[in-house]
Length: 433
Image (cartoon, rainbow, N blue to C red; front, side):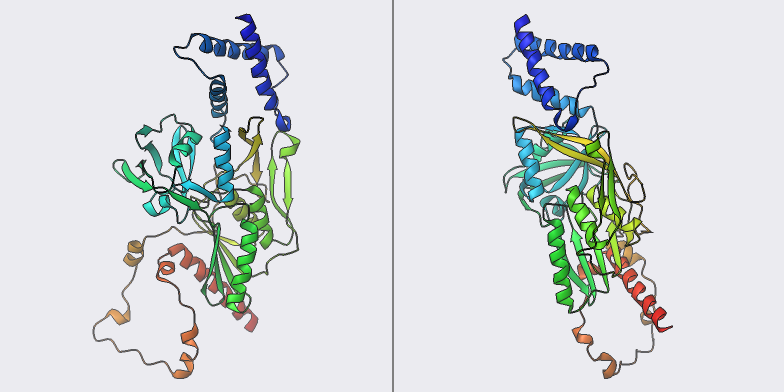
């Protein structure tokens, strides 16, 4: 028995040694206490292996202990088995089989950060802030985050049932969603009207910044001139890679601090500066955010706001201001560990606070917009008919790009476009004066 305990002790010590990658080590102020705690662990492990009613797998027991250890920290730290680690790498590369939903654990509750645009979860009506209380027949109470992810992943064409608790609904609602191959296109762009561009960033992946640069050039070519304004849509963007958030911010900033991080170790205390090369022209810029804008999306919004490069419009963002480092381990598993907090250039931590828009604009539904319409002269009986517009004024009007019905029904987008137009009108008036 003593020999088994000794071997198990050495095994656990080796596992803990692997966790010192990047300087993560046990506190040495009280070594005797640490060794006593390790001995307690090996005692329990030995008893389970010897006396549990069924034979056990030591690796699975160790994995379970590591998952429990990381679960005592914050909602974003976790132990990744080899399969989970591979799934995470697939996410950043933009292709996997599943629902297209970003989730987190909050006080033991499985919470939807945001459904990713154009995915099965988005189309089914899953919303940011929804609480997932069951996945098929499994209760999510006390379920680990990565276990929930594994349950929702699966082959294309298979269905899954999510039971959702949503604020405003009297009772939980079930959603049956068919899994699909999630190919995430993180950047989409188009001209809203002549001279006014729109770019949607749905996530920050490995090629997001380079794709954004390409599509901005495509917008200029489609417009046959420089843009007079751009809307950068970060709504329901759950974040992603920190380096891509820095590069995206750098496209719009010629110099200055973009973001900095503060942690316990020297390696986690970093500063990221903007570079002049490749900076976009100084056209007016509006950034759209909402409660589903998190992490890397908040870095971009915070940097552009603090440098007065953009007006932030929409609703309060999610408030995830921590940095996770992924630390590979020897058996192809990994730690996803919170190692730092990040701060905007003005020194503001958005952790549990979020980015506050310069202009607060709720996303009204179509019915709410229609309810706000007022009586006009044309609605009154026996009103005078409008006089026809002269041909000279109409000349060239047919070539003007028209907004789509979908765009017109996006209240926040329309307010952002109005703002860009207003800025250009004021600039013209100022120049004329």
